[in-house]
Length: 110
Image (cartoon, rainbow, N blue to C red; front, side):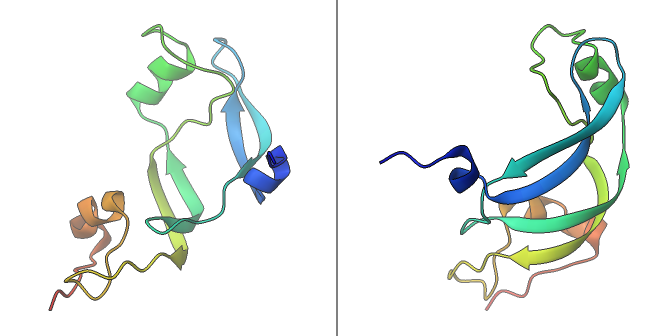
C-alpha cells in the first residue's frame, strides 16, 4: 500500500522559495520526511544566500527545479540527532561531521 504524501513527509516546514526564474522569493510551506538513522534535524535561525544560490534561483546554469528553497549557509539549533553505533560513541550525519570545525564540535571516538 502506498503512503499518502502527508504520511511520507509528515514534518511541517517553512521557507522562502523561488517558484520561477524571476529571482523573487515568496513564503513557502512544505513538508519533510521523518528524521532518519543518519540525519540531524535543526531549526534554522539565520540563513545566508550566496552567489551560487542566486545563479540557481534564476536558473542561470540550466538545471534548476522549482519550487526551490535556496540557502545552504545556515546558523541553527539542533533539535534531533540520529545515533549510529560505530567506533565513535556518536556519529552525526556526514554533513555535520564535515562541518565540525566551523561548529566547534569535536566528536569523541573510543
